[in-house]
Image 1: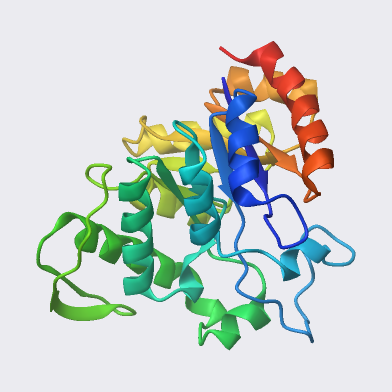
Image 2: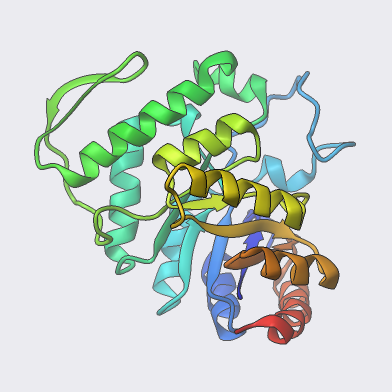
Length: 277
């Protein structure tokens, strides 16, 4: 099983280039960075983790900028969004950012996407929370058209454009792997239709993983890889995920200054070494 790191990179923690270098040095294969464009000061949407929203949510770097810095400092580390809030993003800018990062990194980008949870944040982007899932599905279809065709066009309910040109194209063919976040029936349906990988949260049990993989296989999708997102250090769960067919576990890394970050990475590297193979 492979191991990676999932974290928030902020202006108060380790720099993304130093983080990428340290993650790669310790044998992790991937770095997943979170995204929030902003956090509305008056929030009605409860934080899914319970309690107060952690400070790191307010201060995240743009993940594409941060991952580019990490790309320059590394040679083989996979660079991933965990997750990009695609329904809040401009389609064409996102297409160009993904393709640019993938090309400049030599095809090392994994595109983790999700619908998001903060309804006030969505509304500030002009996104209707009720239709964000349908919008995300159309965005994924449209992005594939832009990345794989010299002259791309798309006509849907939420996304509509006549033929366009856009370069660069990604280095990965036909496009960077798309990892779909979420565990709901709608997320699994989106995964079956659009995704290359599944990015369930660490609360997902091994039996839930098995059940989802059986469902995907019934739809002809035996090729979906599974990466657990932002796990703790529960050895029993890690063993259960491995037996269920999980390809990769990403450990959650709290946002800290460099010295504390390196210590926390060392602790997670020791645990990963027990199961790596």
